[in-house]
Length: 117
Image (cartoon, rainbow, N blue to C red; front, side, top):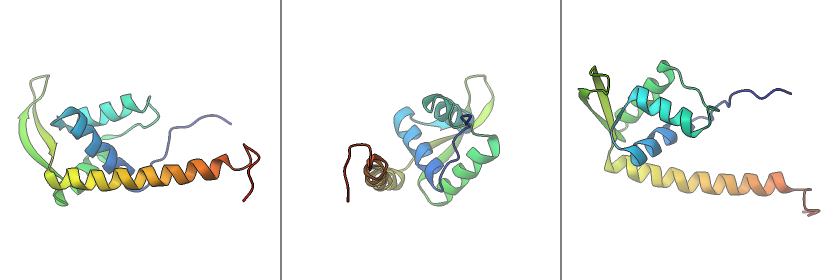
C-alpha cells in the first residue's frame, strides 16, 4: 500500500497553528502553512483555503490576533499572533492530545508484547 499524505482530524490544524505561533512568534498565513509542512516532513500539505479558514476561526474565537505588516518579500501581509486565551487553549489541547496519544499507543501495542486484557 502506498503512503499518502495525512488527513487531519477535526481541530488538529488549529492546534498546529497555535503551536507554530508559540514557537515562532507572529507569522503570516503562508509562513505558518510552510512551517507546519516543514515540521511534519511534508506529511501535511496545506492549501491557502485550509490555512486561512483555520486562521479566521481562531481569530473569531479570540485565540489569535492579527495586524498588517510587511512580509520578507516586501509585500503587505496580515500577521497573526497568539493571545493569552489562545495560550490557555493550546495548553488544554496539548493535555488532551497527550492523553489521546497515550491511549492510542497502548491500544496499538496490544498483541505486540504478548499482553492480554
